[in-house]
Image (cartoon, rainbow, N blue to C red; front, side):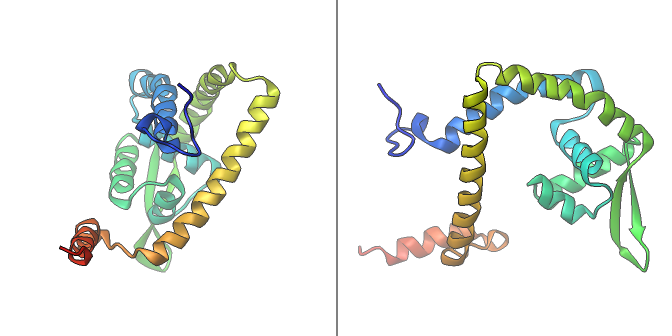
Length: 180
C-alpha cells in the first residue's frame, strides 16, 4: 500500500498526523532529558530557549513566538520563575505590563542543555543524506509559509470565536443550514 500525502484516504496519510507522529517520537528523548536530568518540562524548555535566543520579552510575545496559548505560557513562566531560571518584572512606565528575562542560572542551563538537544536532533537526522536533509528543509519552509497563508485566508472565511464557544457555534450554524 502506498501512502498518499496529496490525496489522503486514511489518518496515516494526513500530513499533520504524520508530522505529529514524527514529533512525538523525536521529542520523547528530549522530554526524558529535560524532565529526568534537568527537572523542567518540554514547554519550559521551549520558553527558556526562546528567551535565550531573543532576549527579554513580554509574556504575550513569548506565547506567540512559542506557538502556545497565553494561559499555558503564563503557567510555564511562573514555573521558570519559581525555579529561578527566569525573572518577571514590570515594564518601566506601565506596571501592568511584564517583561520576562532569563536569570544567569537560566542562561547557564540553556548553555548546558542546548548542545544535548542538538545532538539528539542530529541523531534523528542521520537517516537522511545531505540532499534529502536540504530537500526536507526547503519542503518544511514551503509548507509552513503556505499553511500560514492558508490559515490567514480561512480565518477570514470562518470566524470561529473560541472564547464564545466558536467550534460549537460553527457546528450549530452548519446544522441549521442543512436541509432537513
